[in-house]
Image (cartoon, rainbow over all chains, first blue to last red; front, side):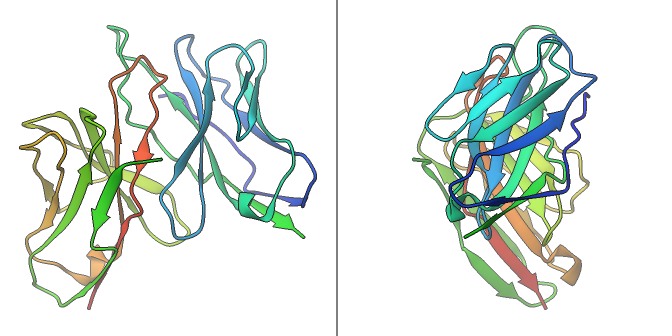
Length: 115
Length: 114
């Protein structure tokens, strides 16, 4: 399975944008890129996903490199509530076109937000 | 808003006891999963199910067992709890998809075996 590489930790100040990078150099053409985050003492929650084009939702933006070997999760204005572990995950497909859905969570990036 | 529930939220139990961790979802999802997570560590998939009467072992070997006799219910059982089973257990569910389906997680059960 294709793997992802993320920095162990990042820091940000409140109200500033945060760019969380992820490398996935062995990604295949049909792998979706997913981002989840886990707040302290909670289960992970979905943030955003994409395949080739950049994506925006109410939580964040996802910028995908043209060669798809890397992506960046963008939090436009960090708040204290955004302090969490952020996971970049690839969701591979069966040969028949459906996905396993068995997401592999790595170490993720611990985001600290300073007031 | 995720409609997936885990009970109990916390469980402290003695060695040798049989325990069942409950997980239910009201979203009609076919796929369900159990992950195990130690403090500050990665989540590891221990069991998954693609529908009723379907269960498979995950990437991390576990002494626990699961069953799926109803779509909405995916309980995890430990026949004889040991201190090494102390961990957080997270249940999740998703629809079938083509790589774009989202996983919804419960709040987890923190298990402590004395």
